Amino acid sequence: MNHSETICALATALGGALGIIRVSGPETFAIVSSICSVDCANSAANTIHFTHIYDGSDIVDECMVSIFRAPHSYTGEDSVEISCHGSRYILNKVLELLVHHGCRIAEPGEYTMRAYLNGKMDLSQAEAVADLIASTNRATHHLAMSQLRGGISSELAAMRKKLLKLTSLLELELDFSDHEDLEFVDRSELLHLAQQIDTHITHLADTFQTGNALKNGIPVAIIGAPNVGKSTLLNALLGEERAIVSDIQGTTRDAIEDTIQLGGITFQFIDTAGIRYTDDQIENLGIERSIAAARRARIILLMKEPGVPYPDIETRDDQTVIRIENKTPAFQAKFGVGLEALKQQLIAASPKTSDTDVIITNARHYDALVRAQQSLHRVIEGLNMQMSGDLLSEDLRQVIDILAEITGTQITPNEVLSNIFQHFCVGK
Image 1 (cartoon, rainbow, N blue to C red):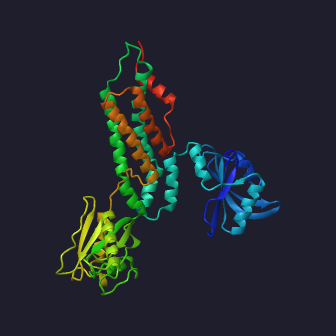
Image 2: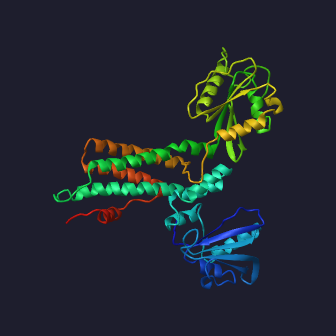
Image 3: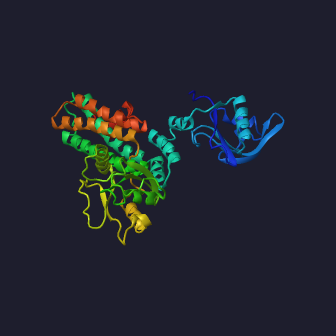
């Protein structure tokens, strides 16, 4: 990609009543002015103008042109958005005219890349744009908006500040160790700072399980003996005949998965093979998968029928188990009795987040946090062992570089030097 070129692209889906074409780059105003009657270069920023698009003397369309001046645009460049009628012919014709007058059709993601390169957003916010577009429910929309507003960036900025102080202290020790009259901060302060950062990283990394569940669907395993109504319950929840229902035991041989939305949250239901002792090798494979599904589920719907005990399965502290006694006056999956109450229980058992919570939903971010923490643990271990500052600095630099992968912002040598002279007295 050549980021000095002026680019254009359709910013809306085809088939609607209107279509918006976005133009961005150094020659935006000149190019757009050449195909319409608006003098973009001399128009005020953040204004909208009615105009016609011309192909020579022919009018292609009447439209609205929105003017955005650098740096106050999505990309941080001079930009124009042309709102046309949604005809495929009109939109293609306008793009053709823009290219003829000097534009290049944008590559996928190029507008957001330019926004990142021009400092309008960091990498985590750029990724949030894609998450926002892909959001399918209230929970995923909320998470994407939080990240786009800089929730993760703010958390990492707080860590960055501590890392800057920690690396400055180590650099000070290395660069001025030959000054006998210079007083250094003792190692206990370095250790305290490193432990604070470690706690911060742990907190963020621990949210990934919740974020992943909300983003991809909270896994719910339906567990029970054969013929207690597991497949019937799945069909009732989905509102369709997704699973085979039969009086013959062992009908479900494999896990059947599907999703629904309840209360703005996506739930991923897993109908599993009935748990029982059997000599059927294929059914036993299904039962093993049932147990595996129970292990990875966030919520377990444990089913039984009257006069039969609940299956004995191992659960974790972070799992919610909802016990269902089917084929009773209070609950009959076949007729939908008790179904609404169960849905409310599922919503209540889902992870709760607030507007101030920062939740990690991106596997790349989680991986970076884990790797950064591994390097930080070596720093902490080195501090406890009274290792030399040069060895500690190497591991600390790895922490900084790995965390910088998330936002794309490095701590530069000049920042370290500035921090040293701003906060410490380095001579008398």
